[in-house]
Image (cartoon, rainbow, N blue to C red):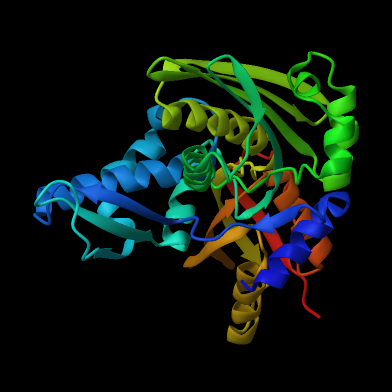
Length: 349
């Protein structure tokens, strides 16, 4: 689907959010380290890549305990559209950087049978206010003087596919907003300054260097709620990734499309009043055209009735309503919704 169509759809669904919605790219593509180019290592790397993709499109907790997700992960190689090894050398002689692209349509089709929502590529931008503390000195994050932290921020936001925006911190902004405002439990001032960026999700964070590790605290302002979490002393990559994981968990639950919960059933339809072959085709074509019906099979003719086996998805009550509105078939017996056999009469024009 073209980009402008996706953006238009997003705007129609969330008109007031159109300014901040963007399309993230390469949602189903991952770069991963394979221990070697041998088949077992390639399969292992593909499964790791699949885990990373699943963690950036599924919304919910404990996703890897779900039967559908387990099946997808176990058969990860069958969803690969293409893969390629980098020619660049890695630290280990046989290891290779591997790019894996999964088949979006095939993967999404499989996951829709599960119970988790799917978050597509139209995603809101999150404004990030970050304070870095080293040797007891607190400073706003500055990409020019903190290249290591900038690299980790980009890597983590890319891994979770969370579009981010950092404040420009011009003189006017610095005059009205201090580090204490970002770290304060009172968020009114921070949110007032953030209005200029036209976002609906704002993340305030603090990274603190403790010897050889980093601690982090995060606060997300979203959907008129405030949520906080943190991470114990760990690598800076892990501390930042936990921050963006928290953003992903909260936003994905809000924006992800919920899986369809529709029952699947079948009925035997015995249709009276069909006298000619052209009428038989007319009824068959009519049934096949109904959106709820998945398959229609003519089985036999008995006692002046044509017998069909019909498989449908959804509510029987809604299906019966479609028949009544179609003016092609009329219900002959007052069958209950759970009755497997139903009699209809063809309404000849």
